[in-house]
Image 1: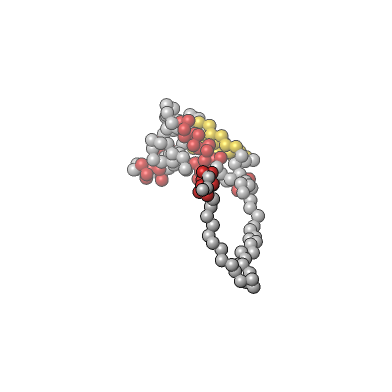
Image 2 (image 1 turned 90 degrees about the horizontal axis):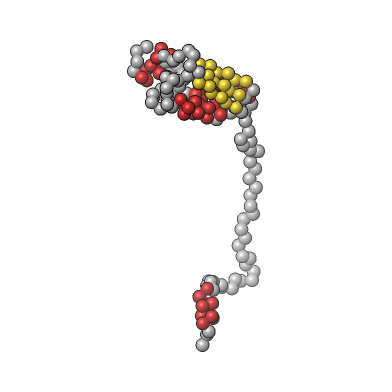
Length: 151
């Protein structure tokens, strides 16, 4: 009678399928040889040349930023006053619709984040200024259309 350890041991052994003898003149099948795939060298995360950074690209990025209370981007609202680009650094001067705007820090932070995402930008700074004060006359024709205002 097998011991208790032998019975447990037989339970843990993996059962293997029975093998049938192969004829001696037939070779077992071989896996196909690996095929080398040539790929062009990758240029991951390399910044694009600084000359490609334009004012229009900056404005396009800033058009992705919205005042959460108004369904118009900050460019078409007329909040962006000045853009300066020099050696991978982008500086933006902007205002808010009111000095007491509780979302001012959020909006400026979103603008900086959008600027940093542009290729070639090494540094971005957004400065909120109050002179000249914003007024509804600064809204672009596209923004006025969205808001349903007369041109």
